[in-house]
Image (cartoon, rainbow, N blue to C red):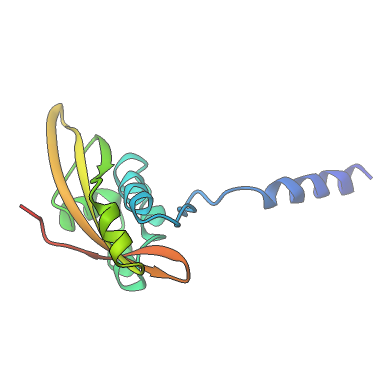
Length: 141
């Protein structure tokens, strides 16, 4: 009897567990962009970052095998710890084009005790009511 109760308890609590390799808040393109970079730079979780990318971009990201390699090769940015904020003007873009958005993201962080600031732009598209990162755009400056 104890075995059955233990099994049912584990099953019940196991079903409610959140997947740590997946970003679940995909309703807002700004949040998706921030969570993508947060997973990559602060959490060091490449699978979580790839979970909000288009199949093509996801394949490229997973090819590098480590978050540091993605940061170095795709973004040319390395951080030990970084604060990531979206540009407020991205909201206007989203209102004009319901199924696509271009999000500008600002980085302010440290790498080997040196403060670094940077800007990146991402193109996101809406697929099945979920926002996914489709392209990494060229540096705006």
